[in-house]
Image 1 (cartoon, rainbow, N blue to C red):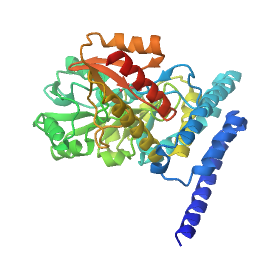
Image 2 (image 1 turned 45 degrees about the horizontal axis):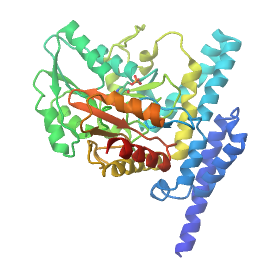
Image 3 (image 1 turned 30 degrees about the horizontal axis):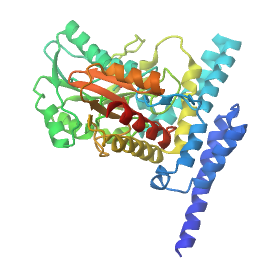
Length: 439
Ligand SMILES: Cc1ncc(COP(=O)(O)O)c(C=O)c1O
């Protein structure tokens, strides 16, 4: 009986794989990757293992090695700085090159008419991924552009208060400070000690800053310095009770953690797509709840700034429409792996790395190993190190391992972040080097 059940599941999963694959193949008709031996190997591995659960595949190095073969990452430098920006798989790179070549044949025609025709499909695919309505998604060049549309576009008057944290992303902090300088709004700061594993304490840290004058709360879903996840849904619930607008910076969580935007109960959300979706460099996305679109003036002027058409946030002039179009190819690739498999693997690699460092006495982990509070980003401090950038420089130049030094407020340490193409053997190498150099 059990065998029959397994066989049925296998058949179902194979059908799903073939249907996923055919929609994938349709978008990569011009890709040379899938006609190469490597590409064929990638597809064979998928067909063989697609019925396996996320848990079953998490530690299957052969499977992840095949995923790696779809990228063009450096074979000589171990990349553990995937928090900043991620490389795109070959199919996405090839799509960008394809659209660029096409655009250069007749730019004013192809950029604005041929290629741009696909934009509504990209919007629909992003909305499906985000679990929201197509009319709630604007396509941007990065998270900064998305978030700043809201920061500078909401109507706020002198004396209104905005609650944010000292560990929000620097350019987001600068934007709020600029708004405060110009319009006389007041910023109220939440402070943290990392790691944090008590949701109610985090919610209280925000809630105690809320007053009758608070109009907006800015919540970073995953803090870039340390990888700390904040309980957005619960903070948003506390904010909503006081009629406070909720803006979420999800630059680090979209297509990294397994969630849908409506789960967060926010009004606005901005994210990069060149981080965890592995879309082309210079891609981002704004979510605005349908009934909240009209409340925000777009950053770039448009004929009807108070309309409730999400497209009013996209009037940025000439840009690479091919790069936007290639977002669709990144979505297809991401969905072929699947968010469950991806987030489980990332979480596993991060914890494997932290467990390996746990035996080094000078190293203190500052990242949660629990799913509610951490994802792929590991952040740790090293006793006796004054200049953390010397550590990352040593790792890169002497050992060919790319990490990043984090220095901000009470933060001074190393951030190491794997991605889907990271192999366990690379993390073993990193741990070995850290043991040798910083014991
Ligand atoms: C938390 C956070 N917000 C915003 C940004 C800005 O993202 P982008 O470069 O896509 O504008 C980053 C970039 O690393 C980030 O980590």
